[in-house]
Image (cartoon, rainbow, N blue to C red; front, side, top):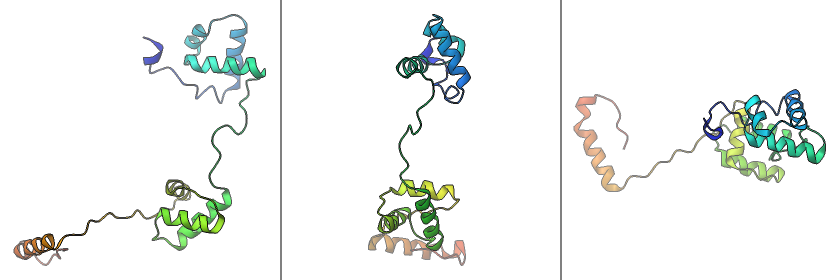
Length: 160
């Protein structure tokens, strides 16, 4: 089975946490073992081994640089502020919380970011209901249907 279609191949999730494995890979490469053979031995994708070897050759280290990845959009204080205003105004939607945060701190965040921060504290922004208003014709037809079926469904209220 080729490397691209092998479901058992790993992208390196384990290697990023395991310095011992990284050093064994580098040692094998320094000993002259091919990258293809190392990929098979450690069950890794070729790009993982290649990137590790490049990093070792450039820096002489296998340590990941701190701060890799995108920076956080909000600070811990802003997250706390979001949870406070969410508790106070439980009926508001995420975009309103985003506007409130911008007005208070000057930090622009998306409604998705607000929802994620609230979910971490087990709070949820209300999701706006999309409701298309009925035309006058549709209202008339629905009222007529309700009147016809009033006996069948009893005292159940029919929403118009």
